[in-house]
Amino acid sequence: MITRIALALLPLSVLVSSSAAQVPPAFDAAWTSVASAFREQVTGEGVVGASLAFVHGGRIVAMEPVGDADRATARPVDEHTVYQWGSITKTFTAIALMQLRDRGLVSLDDAITDYVPELLAVHNPF
Image (cartoon, rainbow, N blue to C red; front, side, top):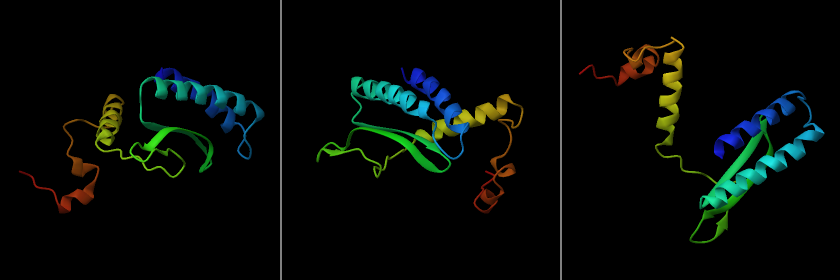
């Protein structure tokens, strides 16, 4: 289902990209459909709280908050909710690295300091 939501966002991005100044009228109907699917999936999977946002030109064009930001106090998710990402960023980094490898832009045998020379200050070759 999440894949279907991601695929549904692609037409939204095309709609918004076509108009730099404004969101086209068709966006509202498309967003309503995507937001409804998102809400249904999050609720159905028992997720405590989640947000879906569409950002264009550095501003939030649409947002769909679902559930609680804090279950103990029943504080709802809103535009100020901070999500603790924890170790999930390692997964995103690994995927990005593997995509770069697949494109021949990096090798898994390359030293990290080849790409982030600032690490030489703390790099231990052993």
